[in-house]
Amino acid sequence: MLLSYLLLIRFASFLALAPSAPMPSNPVVVEAANTSAEALYKECGLSGELNATVFLRAVQSRDAHRAVGNIIAVADMTRPSNEKRLFIIDLDSRKLLLRTWVAHGKNSGELYCTAVSNTSGSLQTSKGLYRVGERIISPKHGDALLLHGLDAGVNSAAQQREIIIHAADYVGAGFIAKHGRSGRSFGCPAVSPEVMPVVVDLLEGQLLYVFAK
Image 1 (cartoon, helix red, strand yellow):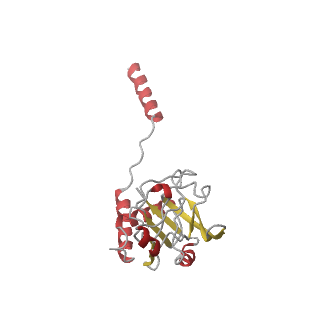
Image 2: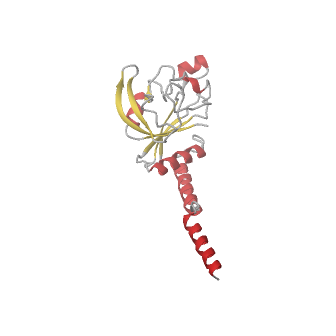
Image 3: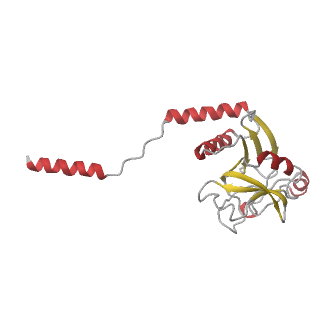
């Protein structure tokens, strides 16, 4: 009897010290969030424009970070650089505000972005969610927007790498007509000079999500 009692105490102590299993995510909550994002996708009129999965990932990332911003730019780097793959969306007014070209990093690939990095000197694009900071004047590029990477180990070195949104003459219809693709940056999501003033006005203090494989 005493032996059984001692064994029972030891078993109870083991259970108390054993690491608890992670709580499973609530499928009802996840499904509700996905349904809400899908409805938002339709209301914004993005069907036939931006891939639904890419938009869902952007919204999920924003929600996971509890990031505040009614405007989000989504760069779908799985598309070739000769396509307009940067989408600026007003989530409050449910409207696609701008679709335009955006460059990827020099060492991320040629026509397609096939590699990403968070490492200084890599000259590669970093994926993930960014808080778009204030407008600055870059000595090399003129008007630009600071970027603050919100995903640790994924894009968190953005400031250290001086990753910014800036204009570049290697992005746009003329360059693409001549070379078959946009030019490439040192990792910055560069846009054409023609749209840069609009991008600054829309995105200062807002969000950017870069989707890449």
